[in-house]
Structure formats: structure tokens, C-alpha cells
Amino acid sequence: MRSRIAALGVVLALSTAALGMTVVVLGLTTPPPSQPQASGVRMDAAGTAFPTAEDHCYIEGMIPHHEQAVELSGLLLDASGVRERTRALAEFIVADQTAEIETMRAWQDAWRQAVPAATAGATGHGAHAGGHGGDAVPASAEPPTCGDHPHTQMKGMASAAQLAALDAAEGSAADRMFLELMIAHHEGALEMAEAAVRGGSNAYVRSSGKHVLVEQEREITAMTALLAETP
Image 1 (tube, rainbow, N blue to C red):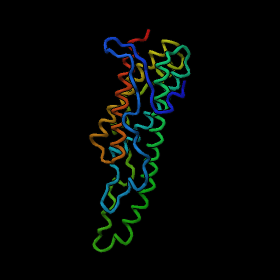
Image 2 (tube, helix red, strand yellow):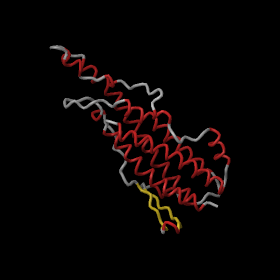
Image 3 (cartoon, one colour):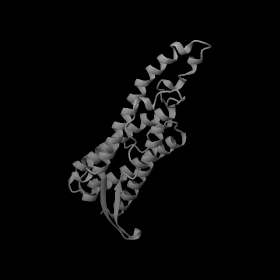
Image 4 (cartoon, rainbow, N blue to C red):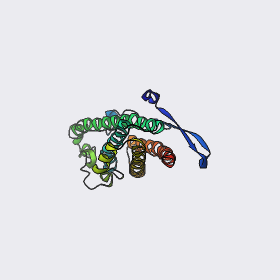
């Protein structure tokens, strides 16, 4: 069963007469952003800026947001009596969002490794002769404290009580509860991704946001149809 996600795609058979559809294909319609390298986040000779607070806080918020999506999916997969289509969707979410978490962590690591090198360059020989080198590293070079930044609110997150209820549920109750929680969870991720695409400056962050917008909107459509068929 779980091998169906090996090709990064899953077919959800849906019998939704109102939509005139019998099959909805959930695949990686936009490839996940490629693994970032340190050179992609350093300030280079062309003056590429370090990520801004909007970039950084999107990643800081989206990692735990994705982690809960994986947790919700795991709870559904542990339940008995769940429809195969819902199970297939949960398996896909685990695969897709686990891969995204790994890439986002790599982006963070690349940035943090790049900051000391760029800072050293700015305080070296380039800092002489009128201080031109002193402007090479912007104030945003160090990861900002996100604090009350909107991304840290992580909209759509399930509460501890909701997680416990899903953990205890079986059959159609678990099926319905998972779909309701995951739809709300995805809607929260869409708000975060929209803000990143609009306000982000880093190419990787904007690419990640676009991927979330496309993929999770498709998943919401599929989950809404599944929910309508739930007993």
C-alpha cells in the first residue's frame, strides 16, 4: 500500500457526482525546491542579499507546521477501519512534507554557515579604504528573532486535545476527523505561503511558498471531496 507514493504521486479515486469526476490525481505538480547550497544564500559579488525576516520566519514557522501535518497523517495511518483513499492521501502527505522539512532545514544550515564567511569578508581588507566593505553584510545577515511575526502563529494547527481525539478514534470517525483537521491545517499553510510569495526576497523561500500553494490547494480539493463521502 505505502509503496504507491514511491513515485511521488498518488491517485485518489473519488466518486463525486457533482464534480463529474471519478479520479483525482495528486502529484508533485511543482517540483519541490532544490536542495539549497551555502552559495545560494551568501552575499556574493553581485550583491545578492541575505534572506530577510520574512524569509527566515516563514521557514521557522513552516517546519513545525509541516511536522504536525506528518504527525496527523501518522495518527490516521495507525487507525483501523480507515478508507484506502484517505490512507493513500495521508501516506502522500508524509512523503511530500517530510522531504520539504529536510530541504528547509538544509536551507537554514546553509544560511548559518554562510553568515560567518560573509561577515569575515566584510571586516577584512574590504573594510579599509573608506569603509566600503563595512556595507557588504546587511543587518539581516544574522537570523532574526521571529517573536510575534505572523508566520510564528502557524494558523490551522491542531490543539493537543484534537491530536489526542484523533489518536483515540477509529474507522469512519478517524477518517472524518483527520480530513477536517488537515483541511484547516492546509488552509493555514496557504496563508503562510501566500505571505512568503508576496513578501519574501529569497529565491528558495519564494519557490517553497509556490510549491505549498499549488500542492496543498490540490490536496484540499481532494480532501473536501473525500469528506463529503464520509459516512
